[in-house]
Length: 603
Image (cartoon, rainbow, N blue to C red; front, top):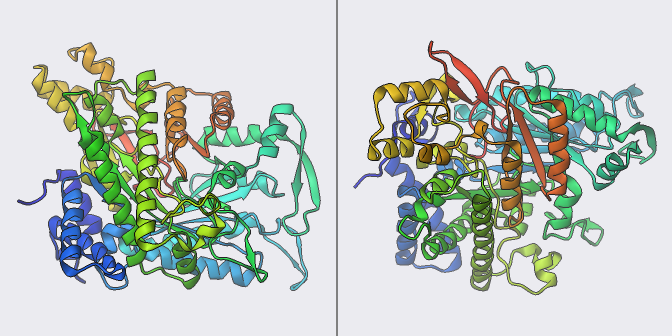
């Protein structure tokens, strides 16, 4: 029996994932794609002495998990697994050294990664500030932002082989002398559209903000203080720009390094071991902090598929079995992967980072009769996140006893505590933009965006997305009508729609019906038990103020988040998700953490 996909899922698969010939004719079915991926990933087991029969059985298990929409890997794995030389990772961080040759070498490397469907993150913090003297040329430096525009132009030219547009994260430390120029570099919405930007905020800066102190901006090379600024005034500028355009976000870089299991800056014979450098940036959506040259493979479990409506709880045993399968799948991906550069290959294989996450949380809560913005939802979220982390750790530890620890294990807290571990990290909460469409569920840990909305995807295609669970509820409870569906499509939310029972309105709560604090609390609930980061948009209505954003950034730090992205409705000209107006036009409604007006780059 063939796998069931929605019309929107088929559209996305045909546009991006199914193999095509030179004339653009589709060469495989969706089932053939899943079989290609399952077989290609399972074949990695031959490196660990598995027999053909064992590999075949495991491939069947992988295929079944994907075909039942219970688990899907990140987009590059779906695109490239089973193909010669397939690059399967979603996330890369590339070093940007302070010399012209190195800057353009990294730009070239990023282009090669984009060609294979991966996203790239960069810290530009090592670059000398604008107008700084360059002794080798007797000239002056043009600064980090100018080189970001070069990277942006290269990304635009690549278009990732025609399947996905390039996606970048640009990060600058809060103490860099060019920080003010960086903070406002996306105020003009016609520029740097292939970049998300975030400020790497230090604990020292956050303390200076709280205490209303001066804060030093430091030359990245000689560490001399260039000037001092009022910390609160600088923080205010960040909030003003985020209010204007949704950017920059914040990355709490000290917290990221303090909680990462790798013990950074380890030296052997004065050489840095690949994969042990300080983390300085993240992937484009922020859920995967990485050191220079490191990469990560992601996959997400559709938790809505594991709801037992009779017990009003998850089927924890079946979920545990899927978690174990997902860890094995992603470790096989590390093995099967053909990394684009040798230094990435070494760092990625030394750490073997994987990121098992979830999608379908909003749908699962509805099936459990739990309102998203409620204390009950937060309790369930923490329980789920804790369960995911516990059993991914146990599965990775079990694999380590089978296959060996990750090579950098002795330089990690795992090694320090003598805990066997196959993968340095095992969990990350990704946005799951496109793979949630394929799975037919809600994205990541987000609430429903709307009961009905329009997605804009690659090539200008717009997909009308009507929530099938709501339609089912409406028919089962006897209030379904075509007229009602049209009204809901026009409004997006059902909270003011006459004819929808209050009990249904309570469950089908949408992103803009929810106060920002519940968005924050939900992200914090998952971050508490997530090895890497959590991708989550903190949505604001269009009338939100700069002070609302400022308050949110402060609360994010206090809640223990590793990063935060806010988005005020209608603050950008182009957005991924839109609500339909009665005249057929589209109201901009929300932009995910994506730089290109396309789907999230993770997959």
